[in-house]
Length: 556
RNA sequence: GUCCCAGUAGCUCAGCUGGAUAGAGCAACAGCCUUCUAAGCUGUGGGUCGCAGGUUCGAAUCCUGCCUGGGACGCCA
Image (cartoon, rainbow, N blue to C red):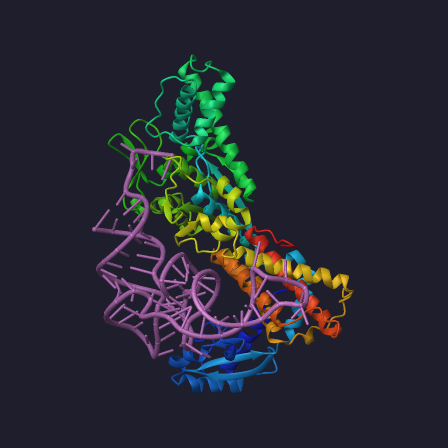
């Protein structure tokens, strides 16, 4: 399946054998053989720095070592075409590219499955992301987290990990009480009654909308009702409304969760008190100033943290610890949280909690999504939910389109801040790289359609060895890297590598397209081979776009 | 003050488990449509990789210090 990786592995083994055969190092001294793919084609298909690494061990000049290795190398193995020693002692390998021909049938046969590997070996990973409080609209920052988390999961899944997506619903804390109070105020205001928004209230237009709807539906019924009952009703109403909107927005954005986890269920199942007991059993709990504290400093946190406040209520951290205990009890090998940059200070105490509960801190990983700065007409816009001036994900999807938004968000590394220019994103110009990639896909589709119309459809017996033009070989090599690229992106949690890859492949396609004619009546054999090549490229681009959650149009 | 992230071409960013001449898009300039979609291609110019030390055969990449920008340092969530 992963032909390129097989070739690379065979080559590594050959190098290792040659090193030992030349007595340059014994098995223990032998460093990891690193093969890199040189940027410069003149440096071959693979390059090894083994001679430099061995310089100290073997006490010889790197170039001399390289010579000895090359002499000991069995070039008949590992598809080696040519070996050169260059620079300070690099060994450059030029491989026979015959194996690349096998790639096309491999890709065409695999179809949508091309790119799959078992790199993750079924490791159970849970990714919790978005988890926005159900108190307002999803905005730009959330959208970035949603896109990142979703594509990360797609990539993990493709690379052979067993992935579960989860959303944590904060439906039990203070913020929900504030939601109830905000709804109450907006409801009363809708009835033209005096009402002030609570100090920490939610000022979004959605809450105003809820107030209006309630006023229309119930008149002043709730204005005269018992306050407790009224707030309880508003709380549930607001929660259902906000959560429903979040779910719809995310689904429309192409993000689906396997599990929506309710904070309330933690209380219902005594998870919170059980978590406190677990910490107490470990001796990490003490009383001070009328509050209950978690000694998180035992695990490197800056200061200890309050779990139960003076007034007897829990801090945010307490149910969150219970939640993470619950996650770990569910048997995941690893749990990943995707958080906004404003929560990064929360990491040390959570790491402390994980360890206090008796788990290795390696099981818990946090991906921080840096801020999104929104620009319009060259002006920076605020995106605070509380000001109500936020540009919502919904608005963005409507104006810019899902494809562009998703692609843009996973083009950059998660720990770089992102400038989002609304004007640029709105204008459907070629400034947006998503069109570039989609265009490559559409171009191929047109060619394949015409191939059929012109009677070139019977390409079953193509001869891949005819594909020797530089740009054809470039395409083949790039496609061969696809499974490894996904595996890398999964291992390093860098979904933007897939976006990068798909762009590069599209670029090679466009370049090829302009240099060579695919459908050539004069040259039926070459045409057959090139049609097969185009089919493989189309599949690879489509699979890459699928991972990003971007459509692969057949026409543009 | 402490901690986290960033600082790479005019702009937005890749590259960072150390490797050969530091890349892409946009912007600028010069070319390419009687031929499969010009939302494309080809070429040119553009860099003290924030600064200073260190580690080594070799540093944008690792270590230390400093500078700049952003964020976090609640018995808020």
